[in-house]
Length: 339
Image (cartoon, helix red, strand yellow):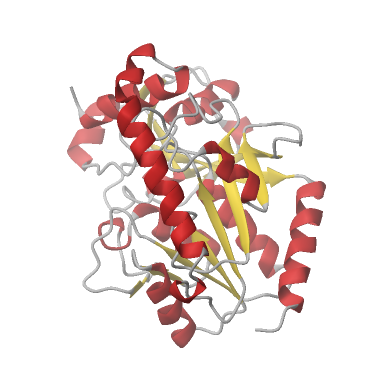
């Protein structure tokens, strides 16, 4: 069985609450205790935490599996820029192997093998400086020393407590929630579920209305973009009757497939592991002569060998005025603090 199949089976078990997972309960309880103690150790020793000289927003999650962090980060970049703020982003750079660390992503030079797929996507589409390094404080210092930045966003890093933060934003998939509410490896939680009570904002991807459980974020498909040429095509111009193949190497591939089906497509769906690496031969054999539809995150890994009929679906995050107002209040308070 492939790695992507194993990954999907494990995610399915966590989110449907498979009874056999209880065999992992002792390990889960140990993981929970270590996670809580680790957070306590940092919070009780502020000298261990590096606080940036500019405000920092963490966009993270408490669960494994796709929750919409990248679309949220791109929305934040745009929202902050419209307020005249110069934004910088730091990321772990999962999947990338840069020549050295820290590494500032060059969207024109670097490929996903160097920068990682998500940082490269953020640098290209967000048009902001992005620095990758598993050591988030070191990434921040590197970025601040080289770029004029008013505010930082940490893409992921909710559990990276060595990095001080001013606003914590936790993402959840609305449909899957916290699964069986158990910590790893019995469940999908990186931290105990009560951690959500201490963050500043909870955003539920796929929800349609704000609630006391969090703000709603929808992913609005805007158009199809040719992976090879960048050509834009409106949804109304696409012949939905033609056979298409869809692939997704993201944390929650079913969300992408459901989006295509909601748009009227009937795709042959192929799910891959998150951050999967593709080859031209592999995808050409998969699609044959049919159009191939993928996510934007997958497209950054295929642009240099894409065929003419490969397309990605561009989606934009949509959030409520209530969320923007709450974020504005939090940010105003942070910006008013002496640093």
